[in-house]
Amino acid sequence: MSNPLDLPGQTPYHMEWRTSRFALDLGDPLIMGIVNVTPDSFSDPGEFYKSRVAIEHAAQLLKDGAHILDIGGESSRPGATPIDATEEWRRVGEVLGEAVKWNVPISLDSYRLETQLRALDLGVDIINDIWALQQNGALEKLKAYQCGICLMHMNGEPSTMQRTPLQGTPLEAFASVQNFLTQRIQALEEAAYSPSRIVVDPGIGFGKTVEQNLYLLKNQAKLTELGYPLLIGWSRKSTLGQVTGCAVSDRLAPSLAALMMALERGAKILRVHDVRESHQALEMWRAVVNCEKV
Image (cartoon, rainbow, N blue to C red; front, side, top):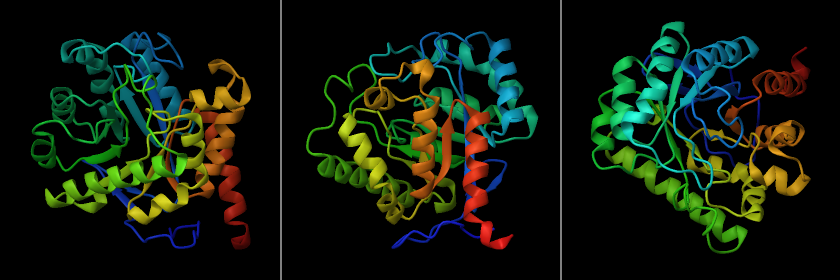
């Protein structure tokens, strides 16, 4: 399918995201459903902490319309306390082991190389890394798996990033995000990663002010000039609460509003908690975009 969204000045890129087992068509945007196997996530603290419950939740997200499942065992919310690789695997191992049997793309949300390699050996398709593969040895070791990669921008680290957010004006922060992603893309290209395996994420809420996050959304289309598909995660983020006054549990409407604006600005993968409602919004957007074909 051809790209239904024609953005002025958009740089052409691969419309297929290749992962370990799948070639995902990005002609239509895809929904990545979030599975937090954690006791302290900002959005659903402890709700899916037990493996059995997390597996049931993951299966429901697929029924609700998710195209990809993103499974993580450590919260990256601002102020989160780090855990070690042993605890991370204790949380996600069983869930990943079951999910890879379902013949759908499975993403691991982790920055630890040890956990990434164990997951890839298990059959996971995508590594979604908030550190953008900056760990020692990550580039060379992950390349052999031919997995999909998401490179994200984060300023600082989760435990401190909102105490010392990105410095500068929203325009300067946008340039910092763009420059960082450019550098990480170049690092993977120099390491002989196939461009069709790479997507990028500006990291909404990861060490950025409210104004910087809003500016990133407003000008998101410019990030398509990087030449790689955009993965965007606005779901339930604190900026939505700052703007609307909504508690985390009441941020569905602003999450969907941000999702629609991200779509209009070239997002190709939408990382969300509320898959059913996001799928419905995507269907409406798709119908309007393609109405001339009816």
